[in-house]
Length: 387
Ligand SMILES: *[C@@H]1O[C@H](CO)[C@@H](O)[C@H](O)[C@H]1NC(C)=O
Ligand SMILES: *[C@@H]1O[C@H](CO)[C@@H](O)[C@H](O)[C@H]1NC(C)=O
Ligand SMILES: *[C@@H]1O[C@H](CO)[C@@H](O)[C@H](O)[C@H]1NC(C)=O
Image (cartoon, rainbow, N blue to C red; front, side, top):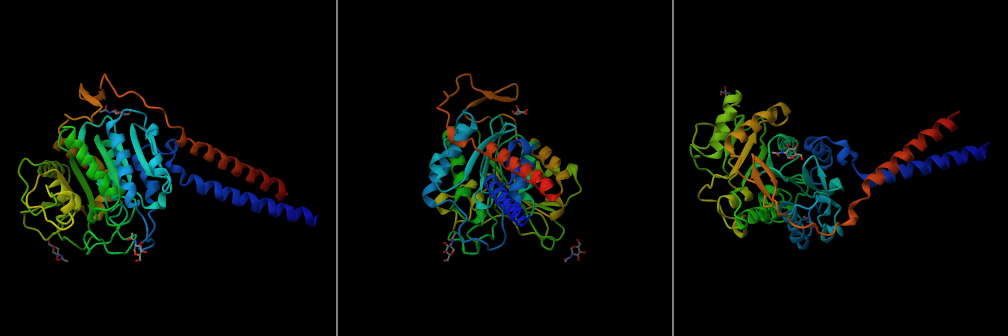
């Protein structure tokens, strides 16, 4: 009797650890395509894993990996091969990056969700030359989910979401010392800026339509009294009447009763994103000078959106943004491998030939079923021995 109890306990202990181990390997199951129906759900899972203030000293790709990461981003945009066939081997040694196809999106993300590494998404048939971005996914609460959720319904070609909180590492940024090193809006090191830089390069080298970026931010309830949304071009310049910004503003204004402001109007809000390194890049500052140089003119292609809490946390507002963006961006643009036919971006008749498929990315569904089997075994043993 005694022996039997002892071995029961050991068996339980063993199964418990096997279960723990197998689940750790799989990470968060909701990143599995079958388990999330859209990007909003996908990133809701990642969102839960951002860690907390100051909990890390390292959170980024090593510098010598940035060009490999940029190559992957380039492959995602410039090829027509299956997403999971894109070669990640140059990244695999130090990271857990995975790329998967999901409801028409190519999603590059790190399966070790708490790694701090950014996620990059391409919609191959996207008809708007726009990249949606959330550089402060956790700190500017819910802007990560907001950007992903708007990506679900607005046909932007790309989405980028930072993998680190801006305060995840409290070292000063070597780019702008008033900000933390993990703050993607204020640092040029790392995967996030690296992606924006290569995307902009690809667009100009391939004579694609001019790229625009929509940068989602959140402001606190106690700043900017009287302003719910502040739109800026990353610079203190009055927007042109026919600018993207004004088209977005007019549409939002028609649909909502939000108090929406921009530079040149009377209000108390001073959050124009003028130190945002992406904004500076979009407004013509050289990439190697964006840390320390203000833009002196606006190119109008970077739209920085500061929002009060009630807007960015309410998913019913996504449709207002979708309509506003449809109003601002014309539908005349496709990624390099696609052409516009009847308002759709379809694969060009002479696509790139398929390279050899890469066999090394296939194991996660196996792991999931393994952990499920263990879980059921555990329940069976529990019921048997409990008697
Ligand atoms: C932050 O500072 C610590 C201590 O100097 C250092 O070990 C660490 O590598 C730094 N991390 C980053 C990302 O700068
Ligand atoms: C793009 O592809 C997705 C899924 O493959 C489809 O649902 C969507 O309607 C397509 N969009 C356009 C504009 O063709
Ligand atoms: C905010 O503005 C309103 C009027 O628009 C004013 O009544 C209120 O006192 C202001 N609050 C603060 C904290 O300044």
